[in-house]
Amino acid sequence: MKATGIVRRIDDLGRVVIPKEIRRTMRIREGDPLEIYTDRDGEVIFKKYSPMGELGTFVSELAEALSRTAGLSCAICDRDAVIAAAGGAKKDVFEKAISSDLEMLMEQRHIYEHTGSDAGISVSGSDPYHVLVAAPIITEGDVTGCVAFLADDDAARPTEVEAKLSQTAANFLSRHVTM
Image 1 (tube, rainbow, N blue to C red):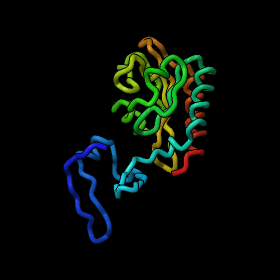
Image 2 (cartoon, rainbow, N blue to C red):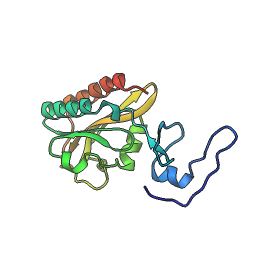
Image 3 (cartoon, helix red, strand yellow):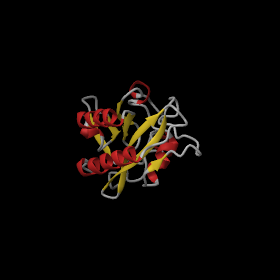
């Protein structure tokens, strides 16, 4: 565990403020759920809770099925990282933090399709793949992630099939994520 040197006091209502620097670094936003753990040494640990992460093997199998059907790499993301991937991009993007561009794309709450005229949106910022098509996963009015097909060719264009597959998978997942 990494020490920060920051000390905070608990107020009369039992609250503690997580410093802005830590919230920014860990991408913790107002309203984000946190899990609270304790250990035998008296440590209290806050961990970001990912409702998408609860689906585990299920999202991995879905990513595999989507990748085989479309013949493209597929990534399923929560708001912070790629939680499932399949196809050629898997080793490059799986469990990597998502790029700020992909995060902004999800917040727009509509299906994105790469046109070729726009700059490609990178999945993690450090991989050779860009988002070909992505559909946000919206659960109870909140964006919880996205389903994306990936390409390593800037000239690649999505077809209607890939757009519909990503949208269908995102809608399906939105009904299985519990907040």
